[in-house]
Image (cartoon, rainbow, N blue to C red; front, side, top):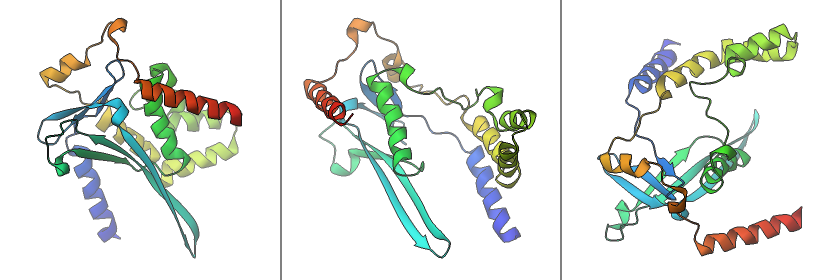
Length: 217
């Protein structure tokens, strides 16, 4: 048993104490994405060149079927003089495949194409009490909701979701900022008249897709 617990605990402590890497920043006013690199440099990638792919696979065994998947987002360095192996950057999210992966991508796409109001608020470090693990459990207890109370007990005691929630808050709240002078300047708000516009190609593609959805609806 110790042979299983100790390595997992050591890995958890290491990941919790490791420095959080700088985030990828999506700038909807400039329609660009800042992609920091491990060597301290950064890429400024046009938003319309960003690609996404949702993957999913299902395996079947004696215990039944299990599905898993990821969302991959790819960025291409606009500097065409670089060698091929230095022009591509991919980040993956273990969020599950299918609708879950597509929903995560839709949050990013909606932020860039519609605005912050189209995206759910981040719950890391700032969740209302009733939406926290303990708050939801207490609310269910007060409402005599037996099913939710049992679910809460399972998540809190067996899965340790409360401690996972607090570890997440400790690690990611507040998130690190980008401190390169050029990116600090790049991140500053622009007057509305200076905001970048969609390309004619994307505008036409959106109109075609909206027409398709209207026909299906």
